Image (cartoon, rainbow, N blue to C red; front, top):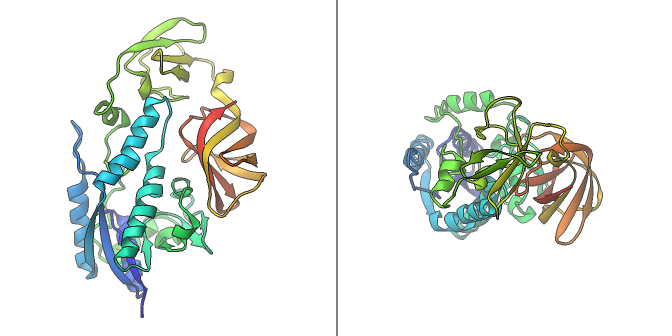
Length: 348
């Protein structure tokens, strides 16, 4: 008897092809559209209705059932509230990571298993080998950075069918072979599930801000910002400080609502050689050693010495890195295997 796989279908080409491949491989496939967010933001329309219709069209094309799991309340509590709270504290969170941890690979997985699934599948660019999370064949699209907080138990019940595809063009070509209506659909952008709304516009709906000073490395006020919450370490654009060399954010003081900047890219406050992470998560366990770390999505892999403690970890970087932002994640790699990581809390 074939295994039953519930496929998270977002209405995009990746998850559509995921479902098609599993049908082709003989699985009993049930599509699931996770309704995580339906709220419009002024000037931006949440694309959930369009995405749901696309998922339905794909399900009809494949001859599979499509169910709707309404996780909107949990998504707001676990992802949106977390994101807003992190920004309020002056950090720069990654909501996609929390969405994977709390929604896709916990809530979705548990609900699917309760409804008769043997496994779940998603359209992530990643691979699982012996319950270990491995980077995708398409390293340009690899999404393991967003998946490092998934447990080995969840991975043992997860399929990533497009993780072995070498390119996005190959994915689209294969989707076209299946005559999937989403084969040429553009990739989604913006906040996970919310749409291509900018983070500043999104935060304005939930946080009241007031203008404050922009102060340079000499302590001189050189401009005014529209809320320190909107700025992150290393940011160059959006400061509206005219003339001369470009300015970069070095740090900010949330209590005084002050943003500090410099024109000197070698300013020591922009660079870090030690990174401390909180709330570490190790997929298959971890021990001290030399590994590679990615400090932001699409950031370079940097050699580091990992020192593991119970509630934190310390990373000594082989080469200092610029603009390491608190709230982002440091994800550790041992070759192609993802060890896990933690949320950046302090840099030195």
